[in-house]
Image (cartoon, rainbow, N blue to C red; front, side):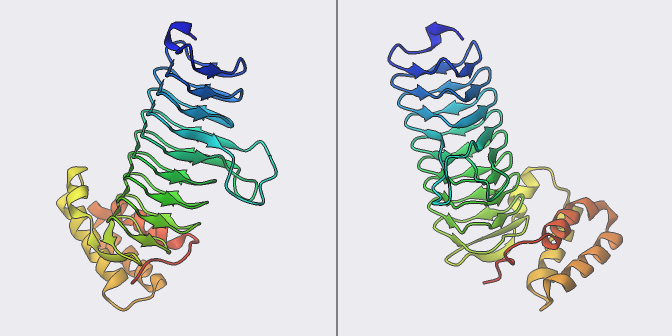
Length: 265
């Protein structure tokens, strides 16, 4: 670790492990069980503590609180962890807590996520990669957010919900049940309105896949089917449209896994 990259007012514990090019801004504090990878920048007035491992080329803007203990009354000081990947942008006043023994014991954030100001990511959340989590989003404990999801500002999500890959949640939403992959919607409670076609097109989904996903959405939300019946029909759709089978499979896998039930408002 180069002392020239550590501001003289910062406090870095001797037990911390920082790559040689990690920078730490004024008045920031790095705890003894923290590991930070190459190219990561920690701005002023940040606190990074707990059993926290951070990858490469992340940016923690001013006033972040990373690796704090869970906001869970059952927590008794166990050495649970936080793992953050590479290339994440974490803006002002973001809080990300470590896990609990009531779950896997680890809160995880993947790669290339854009996490805006005042976001809270609670204990045991599992955040994928390439997500956008806008200002003041509040994620309760044990939430799973899959890759490429976008969550609009001031949205609150109930503990244990799953937010599927490539979905888009409008601002000021309240999420109380699972949101399947690809779905777009908003509201309190969250109301699905269709497939995130614009976002999927930008990510290279073919016209064939988009057409099949729109049909899968109709099976789930427009044909008065149960989730189980919709899954059966989606499998038939995969056989009819093999070029879209992989895209539809993400829906099948999500709906077949245990969850809180899907948002249908």
